[in-house]
Length: 190
Image (cartoon, rainbow, N blue to C red; front, side):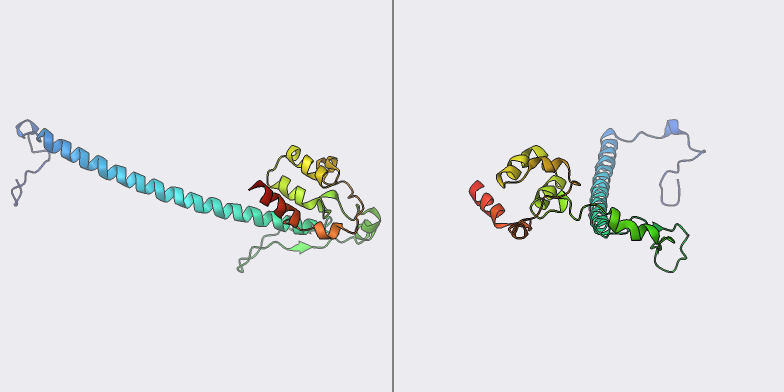
């Protein structure tokens, strides 16, 4: 016994002479331990799921930003020959790679002669909304009827890099994704 009258458990204690803990008290200790452990694990699980969800949302935003940036860069002619140097950057606060121009000016000067058509099907104002739908996951088979209803060639959905058909005078008005035709279709379906 210590100064407070509590039994000491150690090498000098004969455990055969110590009375057992009452079963109801042992059950209360176990229940208390299990309840607190379960609460802790549930709270920990919720916190981890929330952090993973936030991280997933940030990754998705980065992917969308990267896709937009890649699309913008792909739309600039003459960037095919530009290389990015892999030299280590000093820790000056930014980690952006340097973009260097190629030393030869010959391929860039020849690019207009070998340039692809000025507009592909995926860039055509009347087809662009269908390619946006394809990028969002709409099946091509479902879009074929819609393309045909608008008087366009549905076979061009399979070849987005093919040369675009010549533009007519009415093509510029249909260039927006949410045109009036789409709004009227939404009204009919509701």
